[in-house]
Image 1: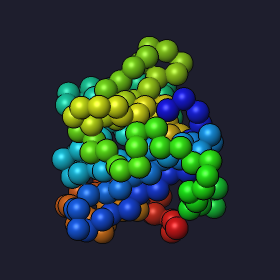
Image 2: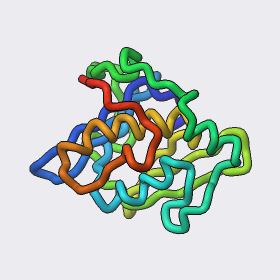
Image 3: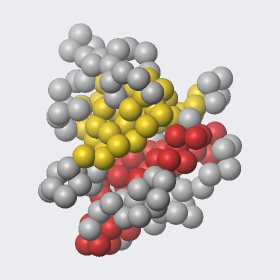
Length: 168
């Protein structure tokens, strides 16, 4: 994903027992992916700035402090939460069917633009900025879908997040 994120949605799909994550970019590209309970357990530490397996910090102390502070506010009225509409300009770089996420990788951690790769077992995945504002946004979106999943995972215990706001 090379352009800025314009919309993020996550919806629990009970028949699949998965969360469908849709990320839309400003260039009208839609990245759709399934998140399983197993993958979410890997993703949760990463959303806190930590390695998914070792739990060691991947970000600087300053960035981690920023991530865990209340200084990154998420406005529930933001256009990023608006439902996206598929039209003739919509692109599906990974195909129209969602990919099944199984792997997380990190790139450019020592730079000012670190990235988190979210990948299927084989084939192409996508990358997102590994920065506090994006991580908190993604955590907030997933927090919306998690209660419907009944996966016995709670993000509020791990994150300093406000109560979920209503998303479309």
